[in-house]
Image 1 (cartoon, rainbow, N blue to C red):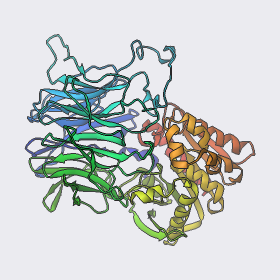
Image 2: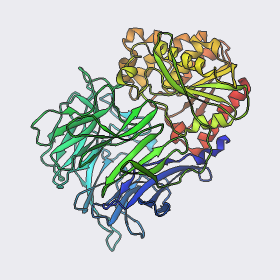
Image 3: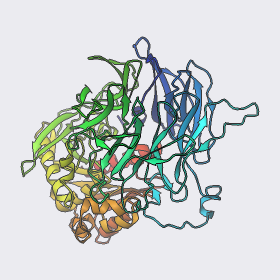
Image 4: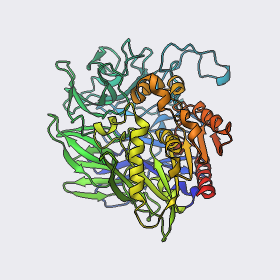
Length: 634
């Protein structure tokens, strides 16, 4: 596989099921090099496996499908070229889709009312006169709080996200669209909404409290669909991801992490399942064990009659669990070396997206103890396999990871690849980075050292205040164990990573440079002091992860730049607001000023997510630059 084969790597959205459970609809997304864009399409497949998947839409960028409760319509999001995404409707039995919204800042994921007459969604509402012409000619922004912009999103302080409803109607004879009704107001971010089973309430998450600039916590709110009767159900004590009504309408379930005694925890906390009564008669209760369970990235809870479908990370896997409403021990519905994604249940059928070593994502139906794979989206049938590696750090702490070995006897040069976060995990799934490097002839070592998610909350929190040293000990132990495999060359080893992985790459190059021939530090945190003031999350993230500001210099790779002797390639995006460009610039200048071998590769128009969702041409250029660097130095 060459670096231009990124079109093989698709992503799978969450499925939606017809009310009788007979049909599943799911969205796929693939990069397209011919148009330098992404193709998002909706696919339908019978859940009994009687026929293969068939394409429903060719709109270019379609996603987030949702069956109406009466089964007649499918709502989805479509983004036309160069425009914000809008809501569309199409007949479930086939036919042309029609546009439902034309909101200035675009519409988010649609949520149906139980009578199938309306949809709720979230959209940003700009201040009057803003975002109407050339961005460079806008009036100045007055900033009064810490959260004023997001990486990949832009400025948000002058366009808060609000809840809307809209009638599920066809355009008028004159082409006019139904007028959306704004439900919420104020300078607050609203998200993660749901409609109650009776249709009399909406629930959503928002930080509407006065101290939201200091307390990193949100609340679950409910109100009538017209915005009246707004009530807070929670205690401003959790970082909330999203909320859903239970089938009986008496309870709201939500995914959240404990925000800590001062409301500022936000780095290495498990996101669990919580429950709170709609009538406010009791305090919220955490239904999942805080230490053991945390939601898989990008997944959503799904309340069903006998519990809540909950995707939980577990040692590089993501299991699908059914969590009882009384908080009893969850029942495992799907496990093994694979990653469960979005799930749905209707008509007694449970469908879930699953990624594993054979495909980035396919749709699977659970039928009792049996599983039925419904789709075949993967265009490649043979991938480089992941081999499990288990060892221990010098202090005896267990370390878990994988090695991918290229074909042939070797000896192969080796890449130690470090993930970001740090509170995330590498997993048992086809991963474009590992596959591209392994197919190019490099053995790839990747793992989940302390600081990662999926191994218990204590595993994640073990790095707080000493990130570099603790993580490095685990990574070097993993590398040593992997090098015992046949066909790996211990004298030709490189290290690379992005974001937190970039931080650790810079750290390893400085503190353990004798182990490596060269390094690639990408979108990294190199200087904690300036990250604190320039990153979109730095104002809270830096203290929580790295500890007392008086120690930041000791924990910053930039302060160790004089120790870096290996050739270093620095990769960064010009519009990265998570780890801003100055992080790359400062390290480049520090190395270049003492004539160290260093190059910097900058991508225009890209943010922190370049490697995952940047322009396909930029993703290919990035892969080619990385492979060229390793060819030159390994």
